[in-house]
Image (cartoon, rainbow, N blue to C red; front, side, top):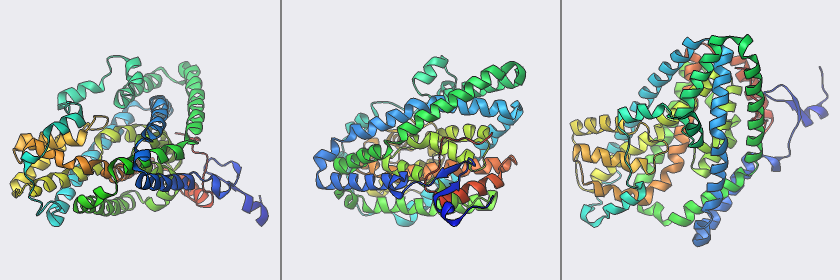
Length: 452
């Protein structure tokens, strides 16, 4: 149907193929979050005491998001698996996702090692480990420890389904959701139609709640950024200049490699996807949390041509198994600490450290002070430097969150596209339609899930 230019300037068709009124720029979530981050940095820099006291605002927003994460993961996975109607495909997708995660995280660790050797961020510091407070690391981690492989795998199985939802244990919720969806497939669509109708209606309700929560996203980004700058200060940037430059520089190069992987293996124009999901990426940077955007990024990945079942399996699993940004940070930080203490690691020691980090970096998500625990465990296992030396990173760790979050999030998005392509389920026509509509409209309704 032909439309006049005047009408085209006011309306367009979004990814959900519904005619909508184009929003004025001041209603753009991307713009609102950007302004909020700038204001947060300003207040944190000029009035650090006030900025540090704004932490509850950012924390409150994260808690609102966590409130709906478990239900969304459960509903998306169950409805996706039930729609596909093939239990074997679920196991196949899981194996492919884990294979990709292992390859990606191993490369990220090795890449971080390479950067650490080239840049040498800790060279010349000559830090005396005895001058550091080892108790500060214990306080940061709450005296906890990373689970061993057996404990981690056993923990994936929930003791109670209700407990998994109540404690927001995402892998446990995912585990139960796969079983629930598989049971619906075995029983058949005729018997499970009433349940499916309820689940689909509930998913609509939860996404409506998510839409309300996202209205206060700029406030959450403002509070989080004001706290980070107010608590740790811009002066910290100078103290850890080389470490910060090495980590963020490595992140930029790694993101460039993700662009090549996305295009080379799945023919996905990653920049178009980032443009489409720019509000989510900016919100993740502002709040320094990937959980803050988990529901929205899953929806946008689905709207960009990935089956709902694959998105629902890959993204939550990647939050525990595919932390590429954290892997880069860990390997660079390990070399930073060794260099700061005047210790030169041989190639053999670095390869051994790589193997230990590959194990300790799994299951880090949700563990307080997990990066400190992983580095402490590596230092203990190899005897590279005193465990108390990890305290040297206390001032810089929080400033690395934006780097870790951006790479972690983008890495899991690329993983979803790769697995969808691997399965032959990536819908390029839907992808082109979504990206074309998003380029003309700043904010589409991200609560609309395309068919699985």
